[in-house]
Length: 220
Image 1 (tube, rainbow, N blue to C red):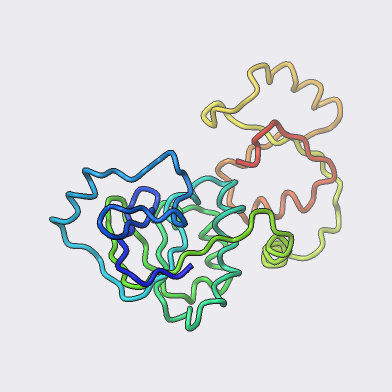
Image 2 (spheres, helix red, strand yellow):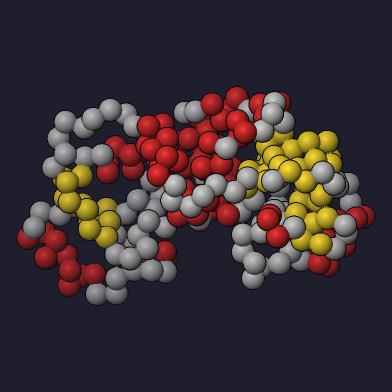
């Protein structure tokens, strides 16, 4: 979607505000989390970054691993639908930008050649002409594109048995995990937690797996 009016991109979830007090529905992801109105008012007394044209790539949605792959990174396949996109500023929140998985794709694709602006926490941005991207969830061709981008070739030995675990700090974990460990050992399952692992490690790991077991929401 193209917005041909002055838009203010707020820093919490990069919701776009037009006509002073109207949040553009097409820019919202978490509808139950509206931007802070008091902070928005205070921003009028501070200097803002201003752009004539920009593409909103992401705010903070991408800090969630699942949403990053279903909602955010697939926007890269839509960029070429915008005329002269390589010369237009792409806005991304610093928390998403600094995630290991984004940095891996950024450094191993054409994304590093684009004109990025990293929106800091608390920073409001004014844009005169803003483009909003919303790829279809779970679109097969996007998955295939990403798979091809990350693919490092066929793994010769696809035989490993992996149990994907999650630590207590992840909030979703197995309370009686010690009772499960003997069963996993009996069937030769390796126990791993990829929470802090880089994307390159995960690509290599799961490319060598024959049997993968994990608890619900392990993908996050």
